Image 1 (cartoon, rainbow, N blue to C red):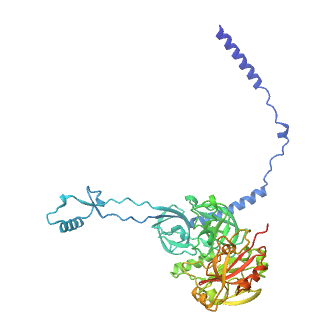
Image 2: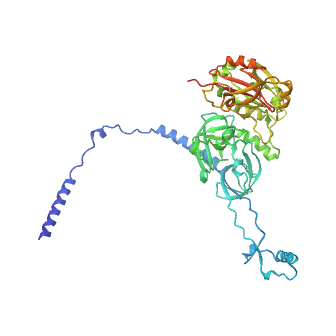
Image 3: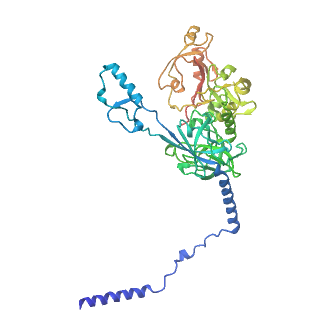
Length: 531
């Protein structure tokens, strides 16, 4: 009886809920109902979007068949091992030939005696563990379909023992390096394959910041990936950021997404023409190996020039000036103003190694290079590009600022050494602002002292005897046996000269020291930051 009563109650509750749920649904809240209807895309707008999308599809369809994926293997050196060990034989491939075995037994008998038979044990080679290769990944672009030439970055295949090239259709071929130019970070890999499609090479000179570009490659092994961006800048100097071996460091900067594996792949314009070879990502902390919106590519105009030399087998020779320098824009304004070089583009020669072309031509540390053959020098990258573009032996005319006067100086360029950059950059060091004394012990230079430290007897200046650690002289970079020849652009030959200039010195305006040593002439500068 109780069970029936409970079932009736449950049924009554369900019926009640059913009736309540079957009523009309509540309407939208007033706030929601008051919202404006969503924006509608017009037919004209859709047509514009479709046109742009169709253009990107056409470019990708044109370029992708000429882009390849490159995988490399590099085996570590085989460790030294013993030739033989005694015991059970290994697999047949690891056994010595009967002739080798007999020769080994003969040598043992010569040493131990004619009755020695080594208990008839077999001698087998010692088992060697297989070497595990290091694997690498990159991209490349076909530049000559008939000869199977593929252009890529040198760092992609550098030191590789095996090179495998995978085409867009999935076929794989063994590749071999035809030649490389480490300073441009470019190489040509050759494959023997039919029906290749080569890319169209455009002009990087015509490309401008703001132009739409596409990058094609194999980021993280994802082959035939296409990304899009714009040219962010041109003429970027990246050698010191990426690899100090690379002297051809003027690059195109783009924000097209590029990741490890894209290296060597093409950067193309909206006409499907290659305008650069993607090379590097700007390293920055945790983002050092992933896309951070700053990507560099080798300009195709320079890549063409390098390719010609690689194919011909003749190394590309670059002009060499031989100076250390700093952009005027990086120097303190108060210092440049005191030197009479305000509001001028150019680079300052901060160090001048002896015996190199610049020194032989009469360039001095502290000179400001304003132009080369009439071409204005705005920064170090510009000077580096112009110098390297001339073959060794070329005579160029430098317009330089010295002692607030502009003079012209002819220089015969040398050949860039294989172990040096065309131009090395240096920047002023950050130093404390609380230094009150020079921290320097000096003496007047005599002919005898000059000879002792390897300088000409007629050198005039003040010999640095000691430098107090942490003092201003130390922060400036002065070393014992340096000879100070100028202070604040004024020649100093005696202690009295030095004190006279030092008494009027203001760290707020900056201090400028010119010094010479056995092998180099240099300028040093410092300014106390304003509080």
